[in-house]
Structure formats: structure tokens, C-alpha cells
Length: 284
Ligand SMILES: [Zn+2]
Image (cartoon, rainbow, N blue to C red):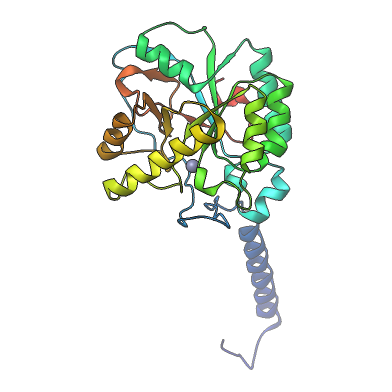
């Protein structure tokens, strides 16, 4: 910085005001809400974090279609606990979540298990007029602590997309907790790979291992047939689709947003990510 030996009084004042303005601007800039940062699980077989919903791509409504919004949650935890862990962008506060489930219960919605939606599309059958599918990705421990009591309170049918290799790790559900959720009779379990692997890329052998291991583990541990998949990172490719079909899967969930589901994209069903606003703000 340059030093001036001879300064006028007014220029000193201008300099001081400028300095104050810069300081205020710096503080305001720091207080701007930060962009959600993808979370890094403490325990993870492959250190790849979940990402947020990708850019919407319009998909034509072709074939047998039903208006069934599929809503997507990750963490349900108080925001003051979420933010220090950089999980703010993937968290809904339990108080807000309670209001959202109360809205479903009081607005005439029928909550469905994922296989009920897939079966209706496959068999071209009807579903109740205001049907909705509520999903939770990854299997976070707060789903047992904070979501389960609210799911029970409103008798919501819920769907848990399990990343089986991450269970028992810090921040993730234990198998005992998953069993507890199963015993409520309010949960359906979906294959979300073993290690949250991106099945849209990589070797077929690895993709096969990821899909088949999670399927087998859920079936063995919970005694539920697993034939529905949810893509980590939102989308899959032709190899993943081939492996899913070879393993008897009948449908899969993407993170392409949209309230309509069609049999023409039964392996890329649409989901809408829900945050901390009322469900009516999302058009529900
Ligand atoms: Zn995920």
C-alpha cells in the first residue's frame, strides 16, 4: 500500500468512509447463504458424496401415465445440527417435516409404497386420485431418530432407498434401526447400491456387484423382495438398465423432477426434491 505524507483532512475522511464501506461489504458478503456443499460421509467404502438434483430435462409423457408425485428427502434433522456438518442443502427440519406430513394427511393424499406405483404402471391399472410416493435416500440415522416418529404419527407409507454398505457407519442407520422401521409396517425398501456408486458409469462387473450386493443384503436382512432401484446421483445408463433387468428389477427412480410417471420411463421414474418450504410451495 502507498503512503502519502501530505494528506488533506477531507481525503482522510473519504479514505476512512471507503474503508468502512469495504468492511461492511466484506461482512455482508460472508453472511450470504452458502451454496449447499455435498456431504462427505465419515464411513464410506468409496468416498463419493451424494449430489443434488441434476438440471431438469423435459421427458415426453408417452405410454401409460399416472400423475403420482414422488417426493425425495435425504436428512431429517434440525437445521442447526445440519449446517455445521454441511448437510443443510440435503436436510429438512423435523418441525417442517411434521407440517409437510400433516399436509399430506389432511389434504386427501394416499401415500404409496414404491412397488404399488411400479405395479400400476406395469399392469396399466388405476391408483387413487391423489396418490403420492414419499422417499428417503441413502439411509441416514436421523431417519430413525427424527422421521420415523412423524411417519408413525400420520401413518405415512415411506420408502427407504438403502445404500447397504454404508449402514452401521457414523451418520447411517444400523440394521437394527432399519428392522425397527420395517416392523412399523410403514416402510418399503429400495436398492440404492452397496456403496453409493454411480452406476451411470464404470465397469459392468462393478455395476453388477453394487446392484446385486445391495439387493441380496436387503432381502437377507429384511425378508423383503427387492426389485426396485434408485440411482445414486440421479441417473443410470444402458449398462445399469441391462443389469437391473437381468436381476428381475421392474422399475427405477431417477432425480429428474416431474409429477407424472409413465411406463415408457419406468426405469427412470421422476422425483421431486423437497426442502424446507411447505408442500403447497412445491405444487402439492
Ligand atoms: Zn443417494
